[in-house]
Image 1 (tube, rainbow, N blue to C red):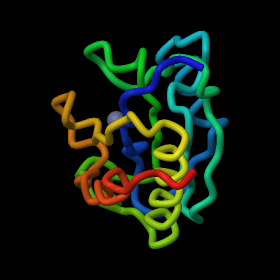
Image 2: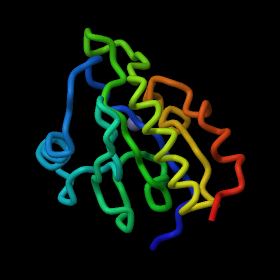
Image 3: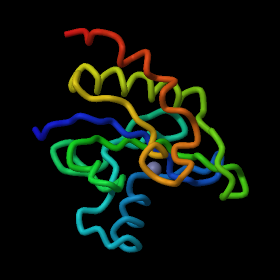
Length: 145
Ligand SMILES: [Zn+2]
């Protein structure tokens, strides 16, 4: 496993309530972004709170600029825009919030050295349309072995 020192949270920047699948993201990242390894995120959280695997954790992702990909994990929830498809909005469903907390707890256990970030800390973007540091409490806990 590569060294992981950051966990970076993203949104798909799609309209509130519209489902999106790993396959769709993979298609966009292959055919629009021309990324031969496909989906750039490692984990995707659907509207119903289910967590789906994107790029394997062992592989460097494609989700952040500034050299952050090499040692990070990119997780992404579906949503992040208002119904107009443009205005940033925290559209997380209660199930997505719960799933995010659970996923971050697992990742913190697996990679206790890693810190938590929202994409917007590293880019001039609104992504992930909420303050990822609301989950900092998870990272302050000593991981349960
Ligand atoms: Zn992002």
